[in-house]
Image (cartoon, rainbow, N blue to C red; front, side, top):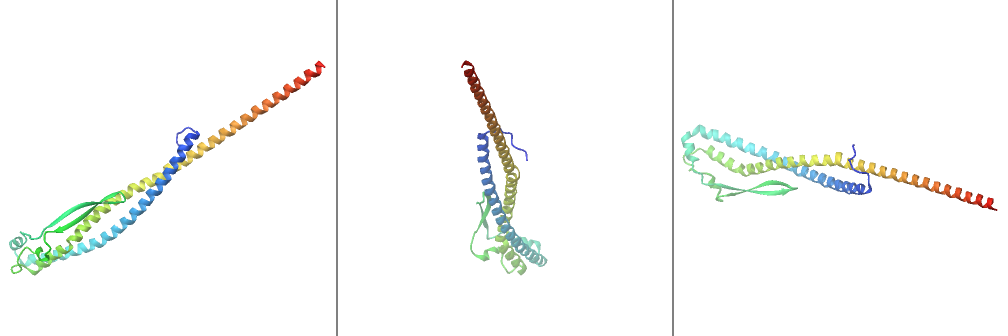
Length: 227
């Protein structure tokens, strides 16, 4: 791992140690976020799988009965029966924050609370299979809305998981090792400079001691000659 291009000084060493501490904390937080997102994502995936099976089964049943209704009713009679629905649904789209991911939250409200309002026709001139088809679609409609909400949430959470995973890998495999290697390099450089300074001071001290000894000897010799 290449070291960062910085001056090997104690100030830079202190800065890098602070950055390394921040990077490790960020790595832990992002890793926890990734794990929690994965846990919630898998819960949604399991619910999505269960709902999809239920919705597909309901649509299959509704299509089957609708085909039977078409076989015994004319297209015109069927169109007239379904022309003016008496029930309607209002869909309110809200947002929910899950681990900094904004996911949709759908809330439905029906025009009336009477379950029979799903039939916009009289039962005398229509097929019973049409009633079953309409009832099947009405029953699975909330599940369809929940399925749409979950699938959109899964898409958004999957994108956030991937982004968080890249950040975790960048910190774990690039930034933190670079900081550690640079800190190690600067520490070794400072130790080397300190040893060089110590050696240099010791040499200067030895030189000064020798000079003092030689000066003392010269003074002693001079004194003996004077005597």
